[in-house]
Amino acid sequence: MTRTFLTVAAILGAVAIATTGNAGDRAEDTQWEGDLAPIPAAEWNYERAAHLLERAGFGGTPEDVARLAALSPEDAVSFLIDWEQVSNDHLQEFDHSGIFRTGMIEVPRSRAQAVRDARQDGEALGVKIKPGGSRPLQPVVNAFFYILNADRLEIRRLSRWWGERMVFTERPLQEKLALFWHGHFATGNVKVRDYRKMLQQLELFHAKGKGPLRDLLRGIATDPAMLVYLDAGQNVKGNPNENFAREILELFTLGPGNYTEKDIREAARAFTGWTHDPHTLAFVIDADQHDTDAKTFLGHAGNFDGYDIIDLILQEPATARFLTGKLYRYFVRDDGDETVIDALAEQYRASGYDTAGLLRTIFLSRDFYAPASVAGQIKSPVQMVVGTYRKLGLADVPGVPDFHVATERLGQRLFEPPNVAGWAGGRAWITSATLLERGNFGRQLLFPDMFAFRSPDPLYSDTLVQVGAKVAAGAEITQATVQGESMAMEMAASDEAYNTRYASWHGHSEAMRIVKPAKNDAAQLDVLALVNGLETAEEVVDSLCRRLLRRPLAETDRQALVQFLDEQLAGASLADAASWIREPLRLLVHLVLSTPEYQLS
Image (cartoon, rainbow, N blue to C red):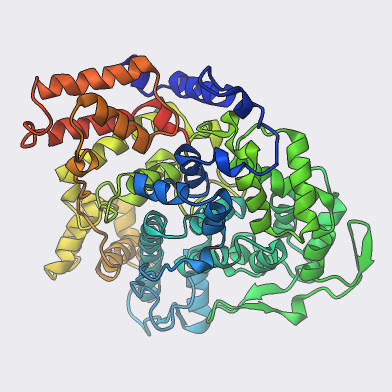
């Protein structure tokens, strides 16, 4: 089974086959490429419903697909887009650990800032400095290290929680679209340092992700996470910071080449004074820091503020073209016909940037179901993990493999895009390292490493577990804990304002005590239920491939899987092998998950 082994060449070869079609594609289907006319009801079937659910969501079980296939194309698309009509009451709100204690309003930008605040005000982070004695600033620095570590752990809990929403939502397009906007308006908690702001931004994407775009742009321009991430606090009258102005033009709306450096400077002036209340996380405008003088932007002159800038941006045809292209590449294919994108962009702009309307046209179009649009995208890590859980019909997201750790190792950390441009996606998902991790993910899911259960949270290192044990036992830091330190450090500790080693210990251990632990259970997968009623190895292989793959395997690979299961059965029927067939079936599922075809959406 050489082609089932994950290699860059094998995956790119599968992409090439998918995007160019093969001999099995009908001639009339290949002519659909570039055709925005709606797909006829007579052409609607299970495979096309599966493709729709894969792209407008994360895939699903055969039962999920069959329900969509039983509808008309229009009703199936409406079910996904008009998600308000679908109950999602079974989903739980995020369970906060309560890491921000009284007086801890926000995480300071640095330890130095916390120290400066404490020296100026006599306290910081809700903690007062010591009135005398050694290390007077120790309580403040302890608090800084605690909230820094607690927030780091809480954002990972938030990542897992969002992953669970994606797996169990009845509104898959709402989550898939939120994931798109998260990569488009890329914001990272490594700088924001406040999981609450990141949650608030995600809620914005959930609420306004399908449009109108004007509402979403106004929301992101006033979003606390974005304000922090792109340095709105430094954007003041007389000394504007251009970070947000530059990114809203280059990365969020118009795209490169459709504005000037002067437009950036003038837009930055319009956004001066835009900030947030650290107590409520609500958007506020600091009138004293807002530039009220006349500005010239994209050929228009006036006393513009940030809202005016957004409205002027939306008047530009380049905005519709830029965003339509990104949405098309995300939901359809990377190499779409430029005339198709132009036509969609014209519709998008004429509709007042109704994103839901644009997606409805795309999902109903023949172009969306053309062979070149099917199973030709490399799955993102989040899409692969979420889709695996949905297609296998898991009733619970397992703790092992840990969702956040798995997706991070595959190259996609939720709430931590690599930079303001987001994830490159496409072929960038595939490297020698991530290929290995894709195989490891399937193995860890089907045959979890029991050593992963050592810690209450796999994110904690062995060192931190040991520290936590000391805290639980009531141990105190003594001189023995600093053995091995250099003499210079020992001497410096005698008259320092604070000791970072003590603060680091305190911060880690206290964060472990406060932050609620992650799950550490294995996936509860009943593999026998996946093949219930099937009798032969061929039936099992075909059923699993239809459940998990959007493009059929080459016949040689299919036969190799059948031969593998036949050898495992050793001449017995599936019914006779019921007492020992679970491991062979899990191995078979892992082989399917390791095919190049499974990496494609």
